[in-house]
Length: 366
Image (cartoon, rainbow, N blue to C red; front, side, top):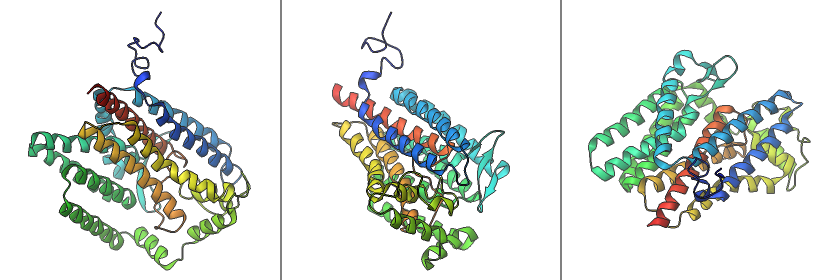
């Protein structure tokens, strides 16, 4: 009987185990453990013990998805991601009809026992699909692929404006812009995309009350949530007040999502907060080091874009907690509570690990 650890095994696990970079799994597993501690700390406030059980269930499913995607060969993974992209885009298109509103935005679709946020789940698959069409245009010079790329951009922007979810929209515009810059390497394009992003931000400010309210409060320094967050960070000091001993979670809403970073610092200290902050770029560094000589433009640009997306979302969450940017409702990858959020990051982590495996083996064989 074959053993899955033998090199001649042709099963999904056996055939991919030896080409996986095992160290790339360290960061998502560390983040997962930190997330469990953070959610456990919230029990006894407005949240009951059920929250930690739901979090562990979401996390377990997400880690299984991460491992499964990381084992897939490049072409098979791209097919799976394309199917995901189409499915989540369909869900995104029906959000304005069947979704429910929270804080001025209709972003979720509710089922009997759970809710999903299609715009969150779509991020990883859409980045890969958009990158693939840009790659095909560069390789073939066929403008049809470029046309498809901009159809994708227009569709997603329109659907996000209908919700409206301006924070997520700006994230999508940023990542689309990065992909275009990576493939076309044109400074004028970079400037143009910067003006487009500013244009959408101005439209959002003058069109949506909840957007202007958040920005005005940020500029006036009159945001009670952010003030409490900063106060909690000061209270935590260098080493924190201890697990479960923080007070911020008792007085601030959405502590399991938006301000989970401030709660971590209050209870574990500034040094621990810096450690968490550096885990995301450190994962990027590990990925880059695992690929000795990048040879495939699509894989290298997609890996870079997905890692940038993950770091950007971490920066947005952390930045809103320490008053660098207005609060946006963006989660902290693999730490904040939320099934859609964790599954989205699992797709991103799994894709990056799989593509790194494929790129590394390609480089070694060349």
